[in-house]
Image (cartoon, rainbow, N blue to C red; front, side, top):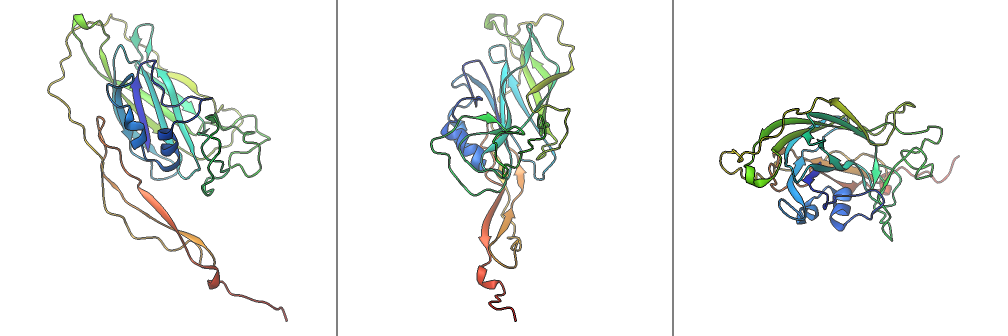
Length: 296
């Protein structure tokens, strides 16, 4: 799942080169965002908090909406890569206002990142806490420099992006003249094509802003009172019952069994995010394997 905030310059969800907070560590390792909710709407520079539904397969699209205003023109988003030790894709303090005007549409590509809280090299590596906690960093074709690293392709100059964030301005709510703020902007972002890796030489894994529609508002923003009708209540996520456990992945030896549940209602407007939608357990035993002690 994805978790995000619209905010001012004082807030940071994560930052390359910094150490992950306890809440961000938990989110990247388990998908639970309760620890990120300590700073929610109206606190610590946050204007709006939002969560996107999880992408159930290796490739897909997730859609959500959020609000920004003239004092909170930046957005930060993190989406956990599943399965992984502590990997994610995300954006840190993306600016949605340019030269005093809201950007109408924007697409940003990004590559995988490492939260620095787990030392696993592969997608399904067992829990291996990093002590001390390492800095948040980009995962590249050369780093971490280890053959077991799932993204290790030393012959490649760079990894292609694994996710694309699309932003689209949906509605504008006007504010009164005495607020001294720009109009509130209701934006939609989607996360397309979240894939493990596609090997190409001509695509960078760095964050590559690309304005899809660079026509911005040309008329000066009118400062009128907000005309939103009524108070929009928070809606918490609701999930269904757990499905049955899958057959063990191995008939001989220790394997893995999984089960999942579906989202019945996605969280909206700061409601509680969805709990984990999948879980796994060990199954099988080595004694089930045929034993041959002698070759005659």
